[in-house]
Structure formats: C-alpha cells, structure tokens
Length: 248
Ligand SMILES: [Zn+2]
Ligand SMILES: [Zn+2]
Image (tube, rainbow, N blue to C red; front, side, top):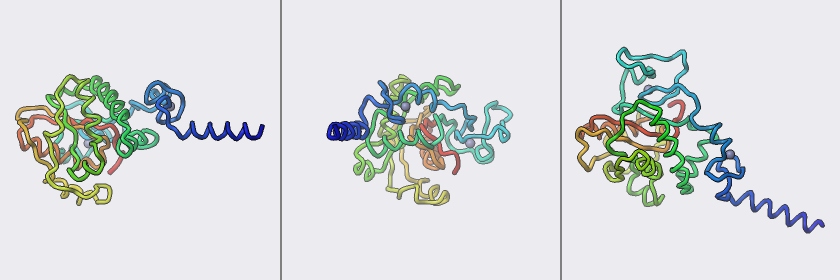
C-alpha cells in the first residue's frame, strides 16, 4: 500500500513538472488552448487607461488631451512626442502574464507568440488605428539572434500580420551594431546607445509601418526604430507590444 502511494505521488509529481500541452501556461489547469478560459478572461484586455502614443498606464486624474485629439496622452508624450504615432499594448508587464513573455523569449514557447498576436489583433480591431502597410519585428542583433536562434518579436509579428492580412518583413529593419543588454543601462545611456543602431533596407516612403515587440520598457528602442523609419520616409509608425512596463 505504501509503495502504491509512493508510485502515485511520483507520478503526480512528474505530471506537475511536465508542463503538458493540455495545461494552462499560467495556472496549470486542463486547457485546450495556451491559457484556460478562466485565465483568458481574467488577465487579458484589462480595462486600463493608457496614453494613446506610448501606452503608458494613466491614472484617471492625470489624463491630458490635445485639442485636436480626443484621446488621452501622458505628459511626456505631449511635451516631447516620440517618433512613433501610436502604441497598442495588451497589458502591464507583471505577473502572471510576464510568464508568457519569459516562456517565449527564453524557452522558445512560440505558442505564446501566437497568443499575443491573437490578442493584439483584437486590440487593433477595437482601436481607431488605421491598417498598417507592413508589419516588422524589432530586430535582434546578429549576435543575439545566433545565440537565441530566433527573434521573439518575429514570433508575434508573423501571426499578427497574417491575421491583419498585411505583409510582414523580418529584414526591413536591421540592427547595425551590437548593443549591450538594455536592462543593465540607465535611461540616458539606453537612448544614446540605440539612437543610431538601426538601418532600413527597403522602400518605406509614404508607408504606415507596424512595429512589433514583446515587451516595451522605456520606449527608447521603439523610438529609435520609428526615428530610423521616418528618416527613410515612413508616414506613420504604430507599435504593437504585448506587455508594457508601468513606469520607466
Ligand atoms: Zn489558467
Ligand atoms: Zn505617452
């Protein structure tokens, strides 16, 4: 009897550790999809007031609007607008959804990319942002791409473009020099670091470009990408980011 109990306990432990495809990635409950219905309903599309330009969460008491634009903006975007025009973000970068970004980025769980894409498509449909002409991922450096083997932003961009019915292009924007890991640098250093780090290889004149990333932190990288696109003649840049850190 004791042996049978031990065997049962060992089997239960194996099951719990296996992260079966039939389990919700967040709570472990049985699920057909990446997330169970409960987690899907609880964590996605939180009703959060965000800056229309940078998607920073806004306290309702801090809402400021431009005269010709009824949408809310943060003080930073009003005072010194970034190079991109709009940002769509699904949720704040925090538990438990940060798990999906980590799974996608470091454990190659590409289903998380498709899940982000599905929700970004829904967020786009709910927005008044016009349809982009082309969807591009924020590129990794060649070195980091080789180290990781894939670009997590492309794992979101490709299924998103398919859902939107527009072209996606992984090589339109390239990193021209290797930058050190952003998370170790302060904001000023990050901005200087990324300012000249991107090149555009393709005709973007007059185009509306959708730029996809998994996590938006300071926005400096996306600003640098948008700046490079606009210098090459892009008319409009919209960011599609899965998760947004609440503050710099
Ligand atoms: Zn769940
Ligand atoms: Zn803003």
